[in-house]
Amino acid sequence: MTEITFGKRLRYSFDNLTSRGPAAMIGMLFVLAVFLISLISVFVIATGVDPEGRGFIEVAWSGLMRTLDAGTMGGDTGPVPFLLAMLAVTIGGIFVVGTLIGIITTGIDSKLEQLRKGKSFVAEENHTVILGWSPQIFTVVSEIVTANENRKHACIAVLAEKDKVEMEDEIRAHVPDTKTTRVVCRTGCPIDLGDLEIINHHGARAIVVLPPDDGDPDSSVIKTVLALVNNPNRRREPYHIVGVIDDPDNLEVAEMVGRSEAQLVLAGDMIARISAQTCRQSGLSIVYTELLDFGGDEIYFAEEPALIGRSFGESLMMYEDSSVIGICRADGTALVNPPMDTVYEKGDRVIAISEDDDTVRLSGITAPPVRRDLVKNEPPHAPGPERTLILGWNRRVPIVVRELDGYVSAGSTVTLVADPESENALASVASGPFRNITVAWASGSTTDRDVLEGLDVPSFDHVIVHSYSDTMSTQQADARTLITLLHLRNIRERSGRSFSIVSEMLDDRNRQLAEVTRADDFIVSDKLISLMIAQIAENPGLKGLFRDLFDPEGSEVYLKPVEGYVATGTPLDFYTVVESARMKREVALGYRILSKAHDPGSAHGVVVNPYKSRQITFQPGDRIIVLGEN
Image 1: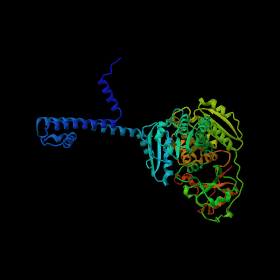
Image 2 (image 1 turned 45 degrees about the vertical axis):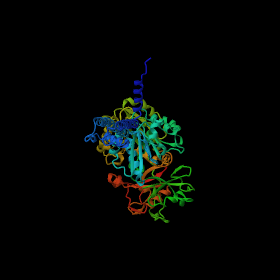
Image 3 (image 1 turned 90 degrees about the horizontal axis):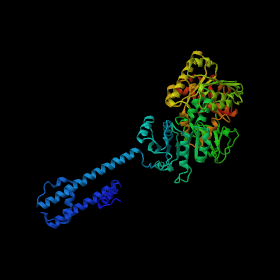
Image 4 (image 1 turned 120 degrees about the vertical axis):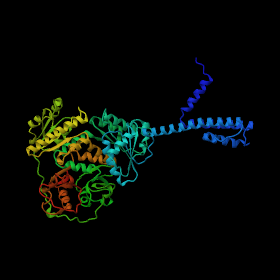
């Protein structure tokens, strides 16, 4: 057995002391300095070598000054023992002060490195927490910053497994102006209970969980939600958690974990539904973008006691600069475009499209100037069968086909074309069963011009280009989508026939490259999901409302010919349009001017939530944006 000597014990004690950090080292140096000065002072007093005959306190003070400043010994005179004693104090002081400076410098460097690593506590309350990192974060941060413009000292706290400085630099590059909102970043694992405490999620008003780009994103989201709701130190009040799930098979487990505290958006399903709706109606994509971002008019819930006892149909005319679209019952149930005779009850809130939450207010106009002589109550024209071409493949294609079956008229057809590797999947989708459509399929490269020419693309009414996101990287899939899109645009121009094109992009930067000035060339991307996440984070009641809007059952947004609502060529106000739509059990949200369809500066002619008293003259071909059941 190794003998533990006194020297080894002394070194071991010294090691333990230094391992305690800068505070312990500074304390040790203080004790050493006091011991050295006291020892020399006692020697000087005891031997009487001090030429000035000072007392202990004066000698100790002089020794302390020599410890802090070695230059003070330059003018010393006296006996040799006194000078040697002062030299010993000075040399000891050089050691103590030099070591102290090194410890302080190292401690400051360590603290700066700790701050750089993003491990310090976020002392914020009522802030928005974002857990995880993906390209979606820039859109989410930008939208929440816009939503916080009317709030002072707002904060967004980000926790992700990424360097703090890198996160801050990237956010600053994509969102240079955060206005009234501070954005703070911390490095840590969102599923680690200790790291979660750094971000102070217990005091957050909303928590956004973003899926990572690689690996198993759904598992990451589920584990993060589990870490939040099952945290032993969690707060008593329910959290408001917003997350994204990609695979429908994982949604039930995620909802079981998050219970009523988590609002989960099924990304693939939502994108598929938006694709199915926007491909059939030119300009609808702009309406959805307007409703989902915080830059224009959005959907808000507001209490209005004056509406109690009034019908939903009456409330449509009671707002000048807001468009009423539904009623939120006291239990949180959202009724989108309910029957016009539905009565507001105590505790209900009005659901309206407005510029901000504080602009949802009654106009005070008791008798709106409706031009009933200009109202048309013609029955809607029944649409005929439609032909839709779907190019490319991913797991969202079956959802799109199913959604189309719920929208189109009987006798419609859908043609699927994808690479030969997807033949089995294409055949499985085509086997049905379907109610209104017949599905055909063929294999071939969707970027091959000969293949596209052989499909007789101009004979179709709508074309949807899906990315190969299941089998390719983001950039590879977007590159193929972009090539296909360019071919389709060229075919459309050469044929002289207009057909709508909806293309799915994964990276929003590629979407910006592909965008042109045509409203029907809308590119569906994860940006829409990011916008939806930000909206739900600000208003939890919107999740159910969005689900209803993008579902074939119930009411959806349509752009219908103006000729079926009001007379053309005559000035009128939007109150008249609202009344005409009300008679058809619809809600008028806005309009689209056909002559401005190719003008991006005027949102391609789309106007959502116009001032109802403002005069406008419609022309044949213009559209009325309505919320209706068909």
